Image (tube, rainbow, N blue to C red; front, side, top):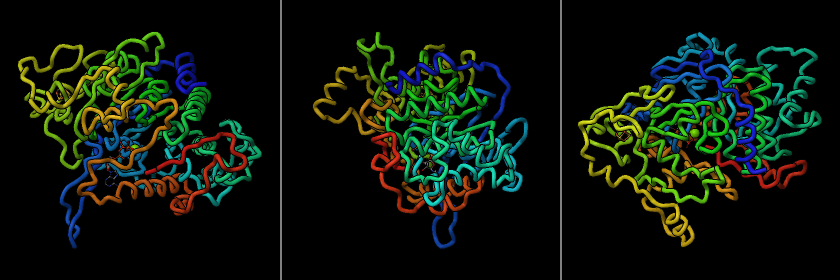
Length: 470
Ligand SMILES: Nc1ncnc2c1ncn2[C@@H]1O[C@H](COP(=O)(O)OP(=O)(O)OP(=O)(O)O)[C@@H](O)[C@H]1O
Ligand code: SF4
Ligand SMILES: [Mg+2]
């Protein structure tokens, strides 16, 4: 079944609408700045403001989707709220308890309740451990003895995620990407967590496999009453799994709304630009002529983000106030929070300021679909240097084109050591291993990888996409 159809079928029919449920996770003014150090004395000369003051809450049983361009701080936000990285500032409250400054020891019991699923199903499993050993690690490390014994419980978990109990003694290289991600999910669910933060859980997978994993996560949510934060840059995936969606831009949340409002009536110009790049799922509307907003220019650096509204260098509606005054995230419609002086489909927040910034006028282009198709056929470049990164990435993958993970955030590369984001990913793997306590998995993350799963015996899913990881 087509991924979208499949995911749609699940989400539209069975998803509970958790409107005003109890809050499980609350994040207030959260910041994460990575210091940039230079010279022999390693003096701090600046900071990558990866997450720069965000507020949101996640209610019990709901799925919050987080979207945004590469480098906008999604993964950093995920790592900080799960306390795999320390926040620079702000407050994180989980299940009524302030967890912002808990030490590693204090965090240990919390690891049972908060788990993370990673993008890279290849790098996140220790190639030298059997599946049984990998999935049972959380029990060993937390000193938990499930009823009926560990082996029986692990085999039950394997069945739960659609694998065979006989896979217990096999090794990760014997599995395809989709199967490995199922193993990662089984490990994450072993201790019955309350919150699962999934960072691009399907973007390394072949499109046909994405649907299976998305549906599996959805089924597990129904069955186990899980709460999810799902980070993705594929808006089609996010749409079908999320109850509410937060749109991030350069370390900030610019719009936070329920799924229907966000997709049907986006109020932030950036959300609108992202949405305009998503293929229309409704077959009746597919034939209609659409226009897409192509943003020009690169995403600015998170080291020195633009003044005022961070989007003003690329926004076609920007006026003087946008360059000088930062818009606050305020509830403009019930359940729809937006940070913009001139929101879409709403009374202007700065009605006196009507003169467009000249930079803004050139920042984007409205391009009819027909023109895009024509230029795609002739192989011409899109309208601006940023067109591909800005909206191309947000666009859902074409049926025959698996999503690729772009390398690293753009902004930090200039001054921050280039290796740092990748190092951070490894560091994260290490910390997760410590959290789910499997140090070897991380220590060996740079081991040469197993051959492609599609070539392996025991692989049911062909054409698995090798992850680019981070
Ligand atoms: N450990 C680190 N040291 C320095 N900079 C970092 C580190 N980790 C992340 N960054 C920078 O922080 C910014 C946000 O990165 P992050 O990985 O959170 O973005 P993202 O939204 O997840 O991007 P992507 O969609 O590519 O995964 C980027 O500019 C990145 O280079
Ligand atoms: S109109 Fe102004 S405040 Fe709104 S997104 Fe554009 S630049 Fe930002
Ligand atoms: Mg990321």
